[in-house]
Image: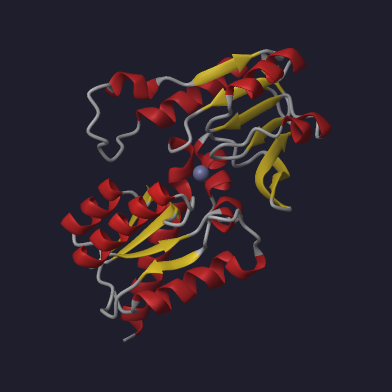
Length: 262
Ligand SMILES: [Zn+2]
């Protein structure tokens, strides 16, 4: 690869339109750990946690693309965890670039479009849906009829894909999808927002009958049941692998094009 972390980060900010997004207080978008060497290998992880950083170091990744960066939370414990992660990343020579809402929302590389396509809904009619911090970060799919059971199976299949090991001995649990089947068995308006989207107000207002997301809190499950809304909860992490993968691939491709030009 050619560029230094700072120039590749500028490339990412440009394609993702990072500056145009307001994000949650802890979600700083951009380069969070840097170094002055040329990037030879780009990797991805959903979280900038110790395990991901360690793995990146082991695999000689010198730029790690993440969705949940280093700056969530400001308690003493949060700061302690963060300092440890930054120390490890610096020691291993792993630069970290993070993108939260811009990466959820991006119409080509984003998490939500990635999930939508992975569920086989890429050819359906869709509109922006799921506003977070003033902007839509997901999609509403309509114009067809989908059996709830089929949609649940498609989400379950995503979870069976080989994933980076979390060192878990409970691999069987990974195939479980949580559902609240409170609505129609035939879905007509599907809302897709990755991660943890539980804004039922938006779901009701837009007439969405089935919400596919990663997770919601328990009170939201109870309310969805009462409102007759289907929830398909594929897991926070599992629904958010698409954006970081796509952005890492994008960087590898532009680098390939650059070196072909040389
Ligand atoms: Zn998330």
